[in-house]
Length: 155
Image (tube, rainbow, N blue to C red; front, side, top):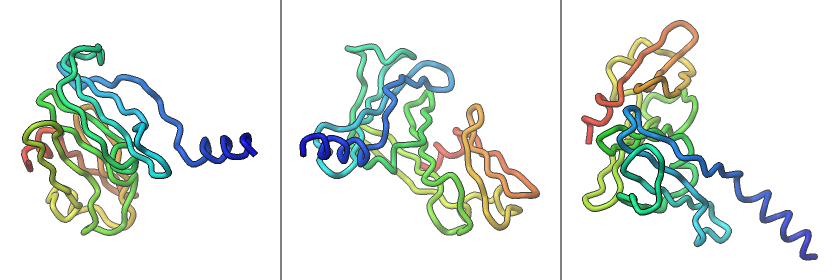
């Protein structure tokens, strides 16, 4: 019976890489870990660090959030996180990128394709990914690139 319970727990919790990821310029970094308070829900603990190495003792801020909101993340050198809500969408009004900060004075804004004029030529299914300091939006015929700075300015 114990083996069955352990198998169920491991299949319900997504695999988590504890890799440190640096901001575009390397002045900050972050890691995500499954929260010990997760229980049957999937919660990640997001920790932001000064410097590019996620070094213990250099924590800037920490926050817990749902796994779906913290899976695809990037961090700017100014401490603004960008999270891709879904790898693709065909609904222009749905949130596709979440821009947020953690710690004291935390702020967030949800961004849809309708909020980004540069994505207006895109139609049908739009795929979303990170690309060297920007978010790329692509359909079958065109693409639009929105820089992290442009998205961070929405806060």
